[in-house]
Amino acid sequence: MNILEAQDWTFPIPIAYGPGRLTEIADFCRDAGMKKPLLVTDRGSRELPFIASIMQTLSDNGLPSGIYADISPNPRDDEIAAGREMFRAGEHDGVVAVGGGSGMDGGKAIATVATNDIDLWAFEFERTPPDMSKEKPFPPLICIPTTAGTGAETEGTAMITELERKMKFCTWHPQLKPVLALLDPEITVGLPANLTAWTGCDAMVHAIEAYCVPGFHPMCDGIALQGLRLINTWLPTAVNEPGHIEARGGMLTGSCLAGIAFLKGLGMVHAISHMVGAEYDTHHGLTNAIVLPAVLKFNAQSIADKIPQMCDAMDVGDKSFDGFYRAVCEMLDSLGIPLTLADIGVPADCAAVIAEKAIQDSAATTNPRVASVAEIQSIIERAISHGR
Image 1 (cartoon, one colour):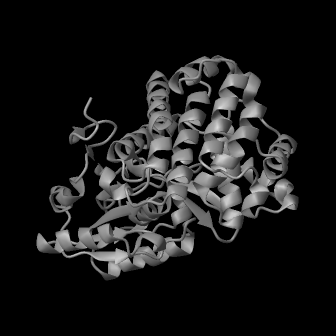
Image 2: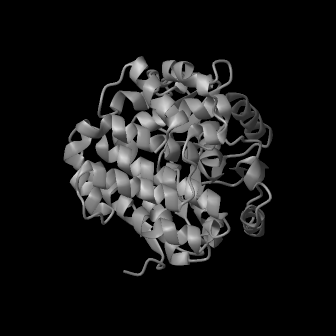
C-alpha cells in the first residue's frame, strides 16, 4: 500500500486524495461549474500560505475568487448571515470551504442559504427540511480539510452556534452535498503539535462513538473500525514528527473515514462537547478528548459487545472494557490532553445548565445508553473534576 499515491474515490462523494492535489483546484472548480468561487475559511487560517496559493492558482486559470474569513472557532449564525451577503454582493457561483471544522462548517452553512432567502434555522437537523422545489439550486460546494479531525468534508451538515440561546445546532439539507472533497496531506504538515493532537482526538472520538451507536449498519461500522485503526497507527507519529507526510496522509484518511461513519450517529461526548463549546468557546476536539473517558465509563455496560473489535483496531491485547479504557487514556496522556474540563476554563458550577442543553442535542439520542438530565450532569461533573 502506497499511502502517498494519488487516488480518486467515488464513495460516498467524489474524493481526490494525495499530496499536491491542491494544485488541481482550478480544474476541480471548473468541473463543478464555478466561474467565480467564494473561499470560506476561519480567521485563524486566513493568512496561511495555502489560502493565498489557492486564490493565485484560481486567478492564474481565469477564475477570479473572493474570500470570506470571518468565521469563529465555533461558527455563529450572524457570521453565516454576513457570508451570505458577501456571496451575493460578489456575484459568486460556488463555495470552496477550507479549514478545520469551523472553516468547513462556515462554508457549508453559507452554501445552504446563499441562493435562497430561507432562514438558516429552518434547516436545523431536527426540523422537516425546507421545500426547495421553487428555490434556486444550492451552489456547488467543494470542501478542503486543513486538519485531520472533523471529517466534515463529505457531507453538507454544519454545526452552528445560535447566539440567542448559546446552543449549537446542526444545519443541513438532503439536496446539499459537496461535489468534491479534496484531501491533500501537504496542507496539514504545518499544523502545530497541539492542534494535530486535538483534531486527531476529534477523529478518534468520531470513530469510537459512531461504532458504538446501536443498530445494524455494517457499512458505517466497518468504516469506523478502519478509521480507528488508521488514527491509532498514525496519530502519535503525526504529533511527534510534524513533517511525516505518510502520517499526515494516514490521519487525513482516517479522519475522513470516521466522519463518514458518523452518518450512523454520535453520542454523549458530542452532545456535551457541543454545548460546552457554544457556552465557553472551547476547542471542539480538545473538549471531546477530555469528555470521552467519563462517557466511556457511563456507557461501559452498553458497549460491552463492541469492545473486542475496537481493541483489535487499536492493537490492544486486553480486550476487556478496562483494557480498552486504559489504552484510550494512555493515548490521551501521550498526546498531552489535559485531565479535566476545569483545566481548560470550564467552571465547576455549569454542569446542570450544560446537561439541560446537552439532552436536546441530536447526538444524545443515539448514545448507546439512554441518559437522564441528572445522569448527564453527573458525567459533566466527572469530566470537570476528575476526567480520567
